[in-house]
Amino acid sequence: MKSYIVFSEEVLNAKAAGQPIVALESTIISHGMPYPQNVETARAVEQIIRDNGAVPATIALIDGQIKIGLSYDELEMFGKSDNVAKVSRRDIGYLLATKQLGATTVAATMICADLAEIRMFVTGGIGGVHRGAETTMDISADLEELSKTDVAVVCAGAKSILDIGLTMEYLETKGVPVIGYETDELPAFYTRKSGFGVNFRADNPEVVAETLAVKWHLGLAGGAVIANPIPEADELDPEMINGIIEQALTEAKEKGIKGKDVTPFMLGKVKDLTDGKSLVANIALVKHNAVVGAKIAVALSNAR
Ligand code: PSU
Ligand code: MN
Image 1 (cartoon, rainbow, N blue to C red):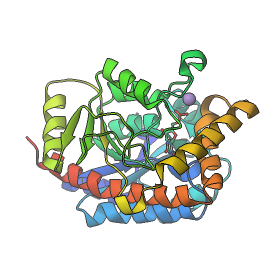
Image 2: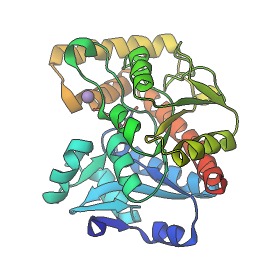
Image 3: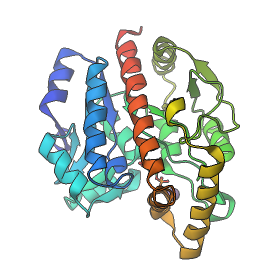
């Protein structure tokens, strides 16, 4: 198994020194943002993690290997490439066997982080139960992964392209704790509020770290969602963004967009319809998540 996994020098050194490490996904790079903002953001996020005392490990599938940490050139090549497959749990075997470029979603990044024994992961937003899932059955594999793989995910909540209420119900059924970071309410990605409460509130990294440490010491398998609201200054107007999401959803339906293409289609549409404002917000919230994620990773390495 080890031969499938390749660590960057930086991550390898961090492992040897027992430093805290934070995993980063690559679907946000290939399918979530356009070039060159995707690569610029990925590099900035990595640096924020270093500045806050942890070591970043961006994860992607390249040439039949799971890369844990990308080099400068690998990240550039990856961000520029237009033939990167979106990889969730089901896709990992095929993409490695055929040596194609693969961008890991939240689910796949959790799997790879777990194989690399990395417990903290920072991203923008997780997948969830889509609106209309009662007939389409479109429920992201991210949720199932959160129920069984021991990696905690810092995100800015769930977008209202999803059914946030059903997403919370699903996570409850699967026993996944949703922890609000300095908030009682689940954030909705572009906005600080969703109308849904979180399960627990944490006001410092230590509480989150202790919660995770206890959960895993007891053998309670699965991850956790750490929901960190977008900074106030970067928040989008809720009415504006929700109107645009409705418009994008209608278009997705008319065009018959299905399966794994739904989320990238919605992200692209929302970006166009907001004149790029959603991209600016997306970049700001990921950077903010990196600060919080690095601090929790540091606290986790000191937890009991
Ligand atoms: N939500 C975002 N940005 C993203 C994604 C979701 O705001 O980039 C990506 C993540 O990689 C997530 C995936 O794991 O989309 C979920 O896709 P699906 O709904 O097909 O499971
Ligand atoms: Mn889906």
